[in-house]
Length: 224
Length: 227
Image (cartoon, rainbow over all chains, first blue to last red; front, side, top):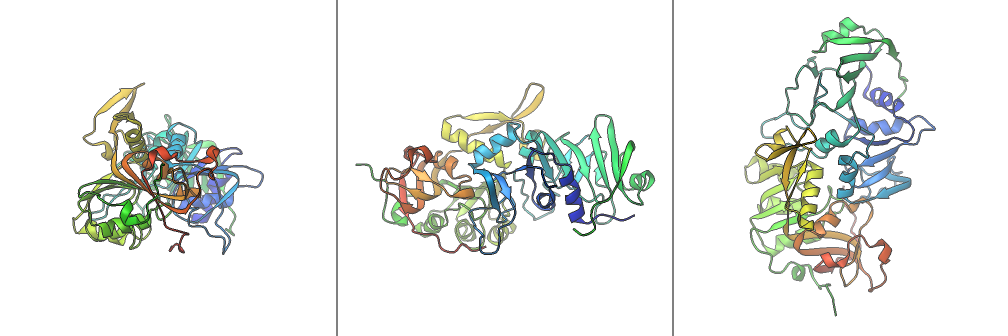
């Protein structure tokens, strides 16, 4: 079974973003989704530090330290973009104006609980940023994460072990081997990488899985 | 005549007391009032409670105040921003108290402080570790947390342009916490790159009306910002 690269995972999420969506991308891997939006789709990327219409990284020489994203990377603003205050940024989030939030996670539960802000490591000060606000306010939350921990333990669990960011908020999980939908009916697999099957996937997933009748084989481009 | 411009950072920060609650804007280095924070280090106030999204970047500004143990407590959402070594060292030594808040709750608590609202209820954080000990209440079948207003003795703000009435315009995403913090303190001190004659700033485009501002100091054009 071929696990996908992190770029391929980000590509996969980008293919499912719809034309006209207002999307907030989390720090780290989710930020890379913006690089793979299919042509012809106009998506407004929102960043909680006060801009909408976040564009790609600037060309060398055009960097502006006053123009950054939530990960504090320098970015550009697309034509039509706008700046606003932090309060307005979170009015947009809590007020239900963000269509989709894509976040990384440590763990997701079968009820859609999200754990992505702290692993309670001793001596390391935790940070939460805007994750809890997004968990409550975004209309939809997709998680982008490796299917298992580095030592092969499941991260899709009956109950999260780490402290929660939000309860019952995650509706989809994109991993390096599958796409899973979370609903009141349970966790359903809608796509898997080549060479993966329900048995193999179930072995690395703590919660019972069902397979969608039109379950797809994932085939992201090799060259990204 | 109303003239809020003062000649020096020292004059802008004169009389700041030990134990003050200081709202310090910025998101990472963008919008951080570095020169005013450096001025506060020189001014000498200690035992400060800092309200800021992050806990300092590199060695200057807020990072310097933390390094020199001037900050007793920080109220923030994400202390470890880019290059947080001053904060990390202080935290490991047990020399700083941290109150962690969801980022939107942080900015809304400051807005409440600005707007004369003592407390509000919000779903964010309900049922998580960050709401431990806070009063909760159900609205529409959903659990909410009561959050209290934050008001500062001092707000430190960074603007691009200002006039002598204290009207302000910010630059790009350096705006971030500046507008809300400017409204939420007994004394709001602004560092600006440029002072304009009264009337030069377009009234349709002023981000912070001067009513919220007490003192303005011009620091000239930005130096190269370190990354």
